[in-house]
Length: 276
Image (cartoon, rainbow, N blue to C red; front, top):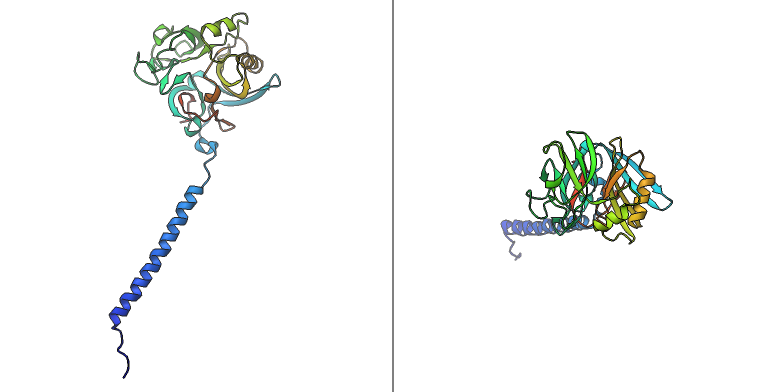
């Protein structure tokens, strides 16, 4: 007598279950491989974040006095946009450099666009309406008059501008590039941090022709060494400017170079129009 045969529908169900298990195993393996590939994928290079954006700057690089390497973006002042960042600059799709001093999420330097502080309400602490604690050098573009100047102020209320709807103001510490005998006393009065220490540094400088330079150095140097490098490298007559925040906040985005400082988030950025 022959053995009883398994019903055809039962054989079909077993075959389908086996095939389904094999398909599920294959899909699980593929999913694991895909996740592993994503986790092991290298980070984008800094340039990939903003490479190819429109240019409205000229990039310059100089090793001044045989020591301090300056990276500079030469721009027209009307192409400057003061804006919040709250990230390391390499993560922001904009060309430019770091701005003023900050603590946590509070901006401690003036940063005003057309009479509006960039980080909050007018008159609010940390908004960019004040140079906190001290009157400090503040670089101003008067759009109505077409002039650049450095004024020592404590708040946006003290700014002397032609039209309150057409200006920007960036706070920092006075460089006094035209007054060699005064700059150290002024920087002390304005409480320039770590002036005698070897730190990365940044600044904002203009000349009599109305050209503006956004400057960052990754070289560890004193404030005096940075200032001398600026005097040596920035062309033109009637130069004046301010120190900006420094050390790990000294950051720059350009097609030609990316300076990340210590990759800390910075509250405020001096951006170049056309780079957003």
